[in-house]
Image 1: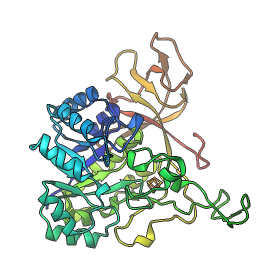
Image 2: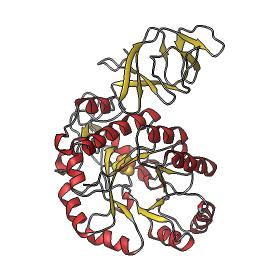
Image 3: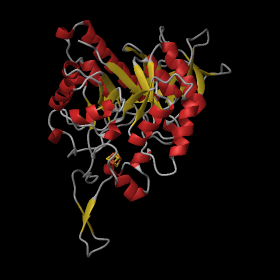
Length: 409
Ligand code: SF4
């Protein structure tokens, strides 16, 4: 049985490093043009060159998202970009637009092509159509059931990729106009304002300004909201279905999110590789997936579409822990160099986490600024020297538990 690739998001170089260090076999990322993410979730072209070096250093694969649907007037820019990208050792381009696909085949025929979930492939016929056009791998539509994934696998030979973790749209991915219609920010251009997660009321047409509230909880009603996807419990079934790549959603998510989620799925896949018959969901994996910001989890459309979709009771984001700092070096006589991400203090109960499910709880005793002066409070973005448990390494992350009310413990 083939263990699928674990494919993690990398919204910037820092997140790329986290994805690689915490166990991704491959990463996907976008640059500031023709990628369905805007602003901070994209790399510049020089950063992409660095990203290729870093992935090469780790011996992992790197895929570039070029999955925007092109508009008239954009083709020439897209062609120019393809020529600029050509020297870079990107393992595959992820495309959705048939015109973009044709241009890559023309300008860069040796480049592997993956089809984005934006193309909404839901049948073997569609998969074969894309394969005949040169696609090596496709990301199946999130809306397919396990049975349907199996049926497609039985009829096609190209690589199949599925999302296993992260946010779900309530519409077919990429086919949603809510954001473009309500805010002018098009989801298909990577600028979704997520209006599906807002709360809504009912208004009778002739009574403007008189909205009727519909209450699901004290905060209102979230008619279009969906749960987040979490398929870790179903990995053996996905592996048995013959899926080649398991993809984690979240180029906009934090470095901590990428590290924490990647390391859990890495651990689960490694456990399966070691002994498929003895594989069980480790409660620690589920606990760890609670530490990152997420909405209530579900299994998407894998078994029963009614289970996902709207979450009737509570659609708020939650996370059991707060990311407070990243370890930047391997330590020395004055402690480990740490960059703060959220405010924390000497005396706090913290956890240090690292690749391979390494984690240690400790109370922070000593903090100093870079001049060696003692500190009581560590502010976001401050660079400080901390006394950490032995075994801490560059790339480890620090977190702090929240209380049940959401406050920081
Ligand atoms: S509004 Fe919601 S469903 Fe529509 S694209 Fe954005 S996240 Fe997806």
